[in-house]
Image 1: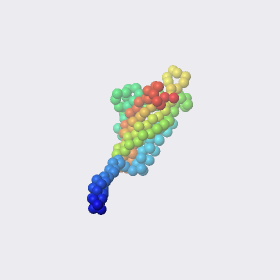
Image 2: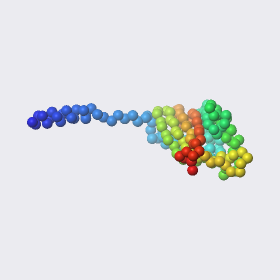
Image 3: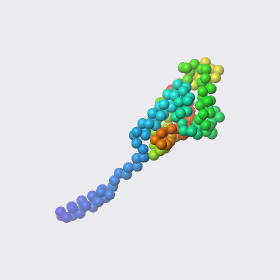
Image 4: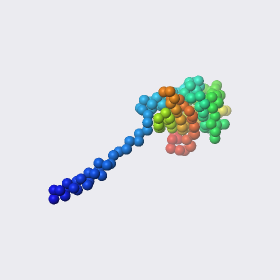
Length: 169
């Protein structure tokens, strides 16, 4: 009887010993995430301050933008220099309180030297000919790359959150 219990115990333990939790954590470190989040925060602050040269400095050469903030970039990416020039012209001469960019949420993913972030922002932008600025929520997808220890933005693709959607006030 004792040997029967021993045999049953062994039969139950063999499959349990074969089970293990597989770790598929993406490569990268907490320090990388902190560096990318700091870069994204600087991106939002610099846009809000209309510091176009600092925003440009956060991109790699050849960086691009696609989205409704730059009408000719809908459906195709334009160089970041063209996109920033368009944004600067749009807010140039408007009251400081009519333009603002606030980051509401950042969802981050990294694998090695490539990272992506989905950034939800609330933007207040002047409307030509209107007395009040428009305020909408936006989602931007940023693709970032680390080269030589430096993280920079490769591309930004933006879209507005549909009116009446869950993020609408």
